[in-house]
Length: 271
Image (cartoon, rainbow, N blue to C red):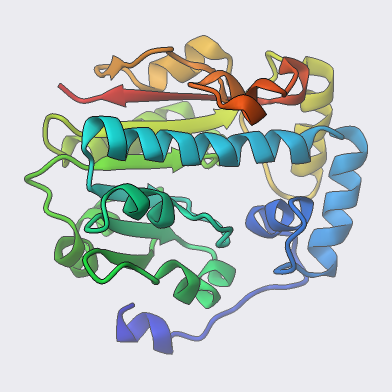
Protein backbone atom coordinates (compact mmCIF):
# COMPACT_ATOMS: atom_id res chain seq x y z
CA UNK A 1 0.00 0.00 0.00
CA UNK A 2 1.33 3.45 -0.86
CA UNK A 3 2.68 5.51 2.02
CA UNK A 4 0.32 8.37 1.26
CA UNK A 5 -2.62 5.99 1.65
CA UNK A 6 -1.29 4.66 4.94
CA UNK A 7 -0.78 8.17 6.27
CA UNK A 8 -4.09 9.55 5.05
CA UNK A 9 -6.55 10.39 7.81
CA UNK A 10 -9.32 7.81 7.63
CA UNK A 11 -12.80 9.19 8.15
CA UNK A 12 -15.07 6.22 8.79
CA UNK A 13 -18.35 8.11 9.35
CA UNK A 14 -19.63 5.37 11.64
CA UNK A 15 -22.87 7.30 12.13
CA UNK A 16 -23.89 6.75 8.47
CA UNK A 17 -24.79 3.29 7.14
CA UNK A 18 -22.49 2.00 4.41
CA UNK A 19 -23.23 -0.75 1.85
CA UNK A 20 -20.04 -2.72 2.57
CA UNK A 21 -20.74 -2.75 6.31
CA UNK A 22 -24.41 -3.66 5.78
CA UNK A 23 -23.21 -6.54 3.60
CA UNK A 24 -20.76 -7.55 6.33
CA UNK A 25 -23.43 -7.49 9.04
CA UNK A 26 -26.00 -9.46 7.05
CA UNK A 27 -23.39 -12.15 6.39
CA UNK A 28 -22.58 -12.41 10.08
CA UNK A 29 -19.46 -10.25 10.13
CA UNK A 30 -18.25 -7.97 12.91
CA UNK A 31 -16.88 -4.99 10.96
CA UNK A 32 -19.97 -2.80 11.30
CA UNK A 33 -21.48 -0.17 13.55
CA UNK A 34 -24.89 0.60 15.13
CA UNK A 35 -25.95 2.68 12.11
CA UNK A 36 -25.22 -0.26 9.83
CA UNK A 37 -27.03 -2.72 12.07
CA UNK A 38 -30.06 -0.46 12.34
CA UNK A 39 -30.17 -0.03 8.57
CA UNK A 40 -29.73 -3.77 8.07
CA UNK A 41 -32.67 -4.56 10.32
CA UNK A 42 -34.92 -2.18 8.41
CA UNK A 43 -33.81 -3.50 5.02
CA UNK A 44 -34.00 -7.17 5.99
CA UNK A 45 -37.52 -6.65 7.34
CA UNK A 46 -38.75 -6.08 3.78
CA UNK A 47 -35.99 -8.01 1.96
CA UNK A 48 -35.72 -11.21 4.03
CA UNK A 49 -33.86 -13.21 1.37
CA UNK A 50 -31.12 -10.59 0.96
CA UNK A 51 -28.56 -12.48 3.12
CA UNK A 52 -29.12 -15.66 1.13
CA UNK A 53 -28.78 -13.78 -2.15
CA UNK A 54 -25.56 -12.22 -0.86
CA UNK A 55 -24.16 -15.66 -0.01
CA UNK A 56 -25.11 -16.94 -3.47
CA UNK A 57 -23.30 -13.97 -4.99
CA UNK A 58 -20.19 -14.60 -2.89
CA UNK A 59 -20.17 -18.20 -4.09
CA UNK A 60 -20.50 -16.97 -7.70
CA UNK A 61 -17.38 -14.83 -7.23
CA UNK A 62 -15.45 -17.85 -6.03
CA UNK A 63 -16.63 -20.09 -8.87
CA UNK A 64 -16.00 -17.55 -11.61
CA UNK A 65 -12.53 -16.78 -10.24
CA UNK A 66 -11.64 -20.46 -10.08
CA UNK A 67 -12.91 -21.01 -13.62
CA UNK A 68 -10.95 -18.05 -14.95
CA UNK A 69 -7.77 -19.40 -13.37
CA UNK A 70 -8.25 -23.12 -13.99
CA UNK A 71 -9.91 -23.16 -17.43
CA UNK A 72 -8.79 -19.90 -19.01
CA UNK A 73 -5.31 -19.68 -17.48
CA UNK A 74 -5.80 -16.18 -16.09
CA UNK A 75 -3.11 -15.11 -13.63
CA UNK A 76 -3.97 -11.41 -13.34
CA UNK A 77 -7.10 -10.00 -11.68
CA UNK A 78 -8.39 -6.46 -11.19
CA UNK A 79 -11.16 -6.56 -8.57
CA UNK A 80 -13.05 -3.28 -8.16
CA UNK A 81 -15.56 -2.81 -5.37
CA UNK A 82 -13.74 -5.31 -3.21
CA UNK A 83 -15.65 -4.78 0.02
CA UNK A 84 -14.63 -6.05 3.42
CA UNK A 85 -12.43 -9.17 3.46
CA UNK A 86 -14.33 -12.45 3.75
CA UNK A 87 -12.29 -15.61 3.29
CA UNK A 88 -11.84 -17.12 0.81
CA UNK A 89 -11.08 -13.84 -0.91
CA UNK A 90 -10.49 -13.63 -4.65
CA UNK A 91 -6.70 -13.88 -4.35
CA UNK A 92 -6.99 -17.03 -2.24
CA UNK A 93 -9.11 -18.70 -4.91
CA UNK A 94 -6.88 -17.58 -7.79
CA UNK A 95 -3.63 -18.48 -6.04
CA UNK A 96 -4.95 -21.90 -5.08
CA UNK A 97 -4.82 -22.61 -8.83
CA UNK A 98 -1.85 -20.44 -9.83
CA UNK A 99 0.40 -19.56 -6.87
CA UNK A 100 1.96 -16.83 -9.01
CA UNK A 101 -1.36 -15.06 -9.64
CA UNK A 102 -1.38 -11.30 -9.16
CA UNK A 103 -4.37 -9.36 -7.86
CA UNK A 104 -5.14 -5.66 -7.56
CA UNK A 105 -8.02 -4.88 -5.20
CA UNK A 106 -9.75 -1.50 -5.55
CA UNK A 107 -12.23 0.19 -3.21
CA UNK A 108 -12.86 3.69 -1.89
CA UNK A 109 -14.46 2.71 1.42
CA UNK A 110 -12.31 3.82 4.38
CA UNK A 111 -13.39 0.73 6.32
CA UNK A 112 -11.99 -1.49 3.59
CA UNK A 113 -8.76 0.51 3.72
CA UNK A 114 -8.52 -0.15 7.45
CA UNK A 115 -8.78 -3.89 6.79
CA UNK A 116 -6.68 -3.93 3.62
CA UNK A 117 -3.88 -5.89 5.27
CA UNK A 118 -6.13 -8.95 5.16
CA UNK A 119 -6.27 -8.52 1.38
CA UNK A 120 -2.51 -8.12 1.03
CA UNK A 121 -1.55 -11.62 2.08
CA UNK A 122 -0.19 -13.54 -0.85
CA UNK A 123 1.75 -16.61 -1.82
CA UNK A 124 5.48 -15.93 -2.14
CA UNK A 125 5.22 -16.41 -5.89
CA UNK A 126 2.26 -14.06 -6.37
CA UNK A 127 1.34 -10.55 -5.34
CA UNK A 128 -1.66 -8.59 -4.07
CA UNK A 129 -2.07 -4.82 -3.95
CA UNK A 130 -4.84 -2.58 -2.62
CA UNK A 131 -5.77 0.73 -4.26
CA UNK A 132 -7.87 3.38 -2.56
CA UNK A 133 -9.70 4.60 -5.67
CA UNK A 134 -13.19 5.19 -7.05
CA UNK A 135 -14.88 2.96 -9.62
CA UNK A 136 -16.33 6.10 -11.20
CA UNK A 137 -12.84 7.27 -12.15
CA UNK A 138 -11.30 4.49 -14.29
CA UNK A 139 -8.31 6.63 -15.25
CA UNK A 140 -7.37 7.08 -11.60
CA UNK A 141 -7.26 3.30 -11.30
CA UNK A 142 -5.48 2.67 -14.60
CA UNK A 143 -2.81 5.32 -14.01
CA UNK A 144 -1.92 4.04 -10.55
CA UNK A 145 1.77 3.10 -10.15
CA UNK A 146 0.72 0.27 -7.82
CA UNK A 147 -1.44 -1.24 -10.56
CA UNK A 148 1.41 -1.14 -13.08
CA UNK A 149 3.85 -2.61 -10.57
CA UNK A 150 1.48 -5.53 -10.04
CA UNK A 151 -0.18 -6.20 -13.40
CA UNK A 152 1.23 -6.45 -16.91
CA UNK A 153 -1.44 -4.82 -19.06
CA UNK A 154 0.06 -6.32 -22.21
CA UNK A 155 -1.19 -9.71 -21.01
CA UNK A 156 -4.82 -10.79 -20.32
CA UNK A 157 -6.47 -9.53 -17.14
CA UNK A 158 -9.78 -10.51 -15.56
CA UNK A 159 -11.76 -7.45 -14.50
CA UNK A 160 -14.10 -8.31 -11.63
CA UNK A 161 -17.10 -6.05 -10.89
CA UNK A 162 -19.00 -8.16 -8.39
CA UNK A 163 -22.07 -6.64 -6.69
CA UNK A 164 -20.94 -3.08 -7.30
CA UNK A 165 -22.65 -1.82 -10.45
CA UNK A 166 -26.06 -1.63 -8.75
CA UNK A 167 -24.66 1.44 -6.97
CA UNK A 168 -24.03 3.10 -10.35
CA UNK A 169 -27.55 4.26 -11.12
CA UNK A 170 -26.72 6.19 -14.32
CA UNK A 171 -26.51 3.61 -17.14
CA UNK A 172 -24.43 5.85 -19.38
CA UNK A 173 -21.92 6.16 -16.55
CA UNK A 174 -21.91 2.37 -16.08
CA UNK A 175 -21.14 1.92 -19.79
CA UNK A 176 -18.41 4.55 -19.60
CA UNK A 177 -16.80 2.87 -16.59
CA UNK A 178 -16.75 -0.55 -18.25
CA UNK A 179 -15.53 0.86 -21.58
CA UNK A 180 -12.78 2.85 -19.91
CA UNK A 181 -11.49 -0.15 -18.01
CA UNK A 182 -11.86 -2.79 -20.73
CA UNK A 183 -10.33 -0.56 -23.43
CA UNK A 184 -7.11 -0.56 -21.42
CA UNK A 185 -6.96 -4.35 -21.29
CA UNK A 186 -5.68 -6.53 -24.14
CA UNK A 187 -7.58 -9.06 -26.22
CA UNK A 188 -8.14 -12.25 -24.28
CA UNK A 189 -9.08 -10.33 -21.12
CA UNK A 190 -12.34 -11.03 -19.31
CA UNK A 191 -15.12 -9.18 -17.54
CA UNK A 192 -16.93 -10.91 -14.67
CA UNK A 193 -19.80 -9.02 -13.10
CA UNK A 194 -22.91 -9.39 -11.00
CA UNK A 195 -25.62 -6.87 -10.18
CA UNK A 196 -29.07 -6.68 -8.60
CA UNK A 197 -32.21 -7.83 -10.40
CA UNK A 198 -35.86 -8.02 -9.44
CA UNK A 199 -36.70 -10.58 -12.13
CA UNK A 200 -36.74 -13.44 -9.63
CA UNK A 201 -38.78 -11.73 -6.90
CA UNK A 202 -40.01 -8.28 -7.91
CA UNK A 203 -42.08 -7.35 -4.85
CA UNK A 204 -39.39 -8.23 -2.33
CA UNK A 205 -36.48 -6.67 -4.24
CA UNK A 206 -38.30 -3.44 -5.03
CA UNK A 207 -39.24 -3.07 -1.36
CA UNK A 208 -35.62 -3.72 -0.38
CA UNK A 209 -34.21 -1.23 -2.89
CA UNK A 210 -36.64 1.39 -1.56
CA UNK A 211 -35.41 0.65 1.97
CA UNK A 212 -31.80 1.16 0.86
CA UNK A 213 -32.73 4.42 -0.87
CA UNK A 214 -34.51 5.68 2.26
CA UNK A 215 -31.17 5.26 4.07
CA UNK A 216 -29.26 7.28 1.50
CA UNK A 217 -28.03 4.34 -0.60
CA UNK A 218 -29.65 4.43 -4.06
CA UNK A 219 -29.39 1.35 -6.26
CA UNK A 220 -30.40 0.41 -9.79
CA UNK A 221 -32.37 -2.75 -10.59
CA UNK A 222 -31.49 -4.35 -13.93
CA UNK A 223 -33.29 -7.01 -15.96
CA UNK A 224 -31.48 -9.66 -17.98
CA UNK A 225 -31.30 -7.53 -21.14
CA UNK A 226 -29.88 -4.62 -19.14
CA UNK A 227 -27.12 -6.84 -17.80
CA UNK A 228 -26.37 -8.34 -21.21
CA UNK A 229 -25.88 -4.78 -22.51
CA UNK A 230 -23.19 -4.18 -19.88
CA UNK A 231 -21.16 -6.80 -21.80
CA UNK A 232 -21.78 -5.19 -25.19
CA UNK A 233 -18.94 -5.71 -27.68
CA UNK A 234 -17.70 -8.79 -25.81
CA UNK A 235 -18.34 -12.51 -26.15
CA UNK A 236 -20.60 -13.64 -23.31
CA UNK A 237 -19.56 -17.15 -22.33
CA UNK A 238 -21.77 -20.10 -21.48
CA UNK A 239 -24.28 -20.15 -19.78
CA UNK A 240 -24.86 -16.46 -20.51
CA UNK A 241 -26.35 -13.96 -18.06
CA UNK A 242 -28.16 -15.97 -15.40
CA UNK A 243 -29.08 -15.75 -11.74
CA UNK A 244 -25.74 -16.18 -9.98
CA UNK A 245 -26.57 -19.53 -8.41
CA UNK A 246 -27.23 -20.93 -11.90
CA UNK A 247 -23.80 -19.99 -13.25
CA UNK A 248 -21.85 -23.28 -13.42
CA UNK A 249 -23.38 -24.29 -10.07
CA UNK A 250 -21.94 -26.58 -7.45
CA UNK A 251 -24.19 -28.64 -5.20
CA UNK A 252 -24.69 -25.81 -2.73
CA UNK A 253 -25.65 -23.35 -5.46
CA UNK A 254 -28.16 -25.81 -6.88
CA UNK A 255 -29.95 -25.85 -3.52
CA UNK A 256 -31.03 -22.19 -3.80
CA UNK A 257 -34.56 -21.47 -5.07
CA UNK A 258 -34.61 -18.83 -7.80
CA UNK A 259 -36.88 -16.55 -5.76
CA UNK A 260 -34.19 -16.30 -3.05
CA UNK A 261 -31.44 -15.07 -5.42
CA UNK A 262 -31.63 -11.50 -6.66
CA UNK A 263 -28.41 -11.08 -8.64
CA UNK A 264 -27.62 -11.69 -12.29
CA UNK A 265 -24.08 -12.65 -13.17
CA UNK A 266 -22.03 -13.47 -16.21
CA UNK A 267 -18.58 -13.75 -17.75
CA UNK A 268 -17.46 -12.31 -21.10
CA UNK A 269 -14.24 -12.30 -23.10
CA UNK A 270 -12.72 -9.40 -25.02
CA UNK A 271 -11.76 -10.61 -28.47
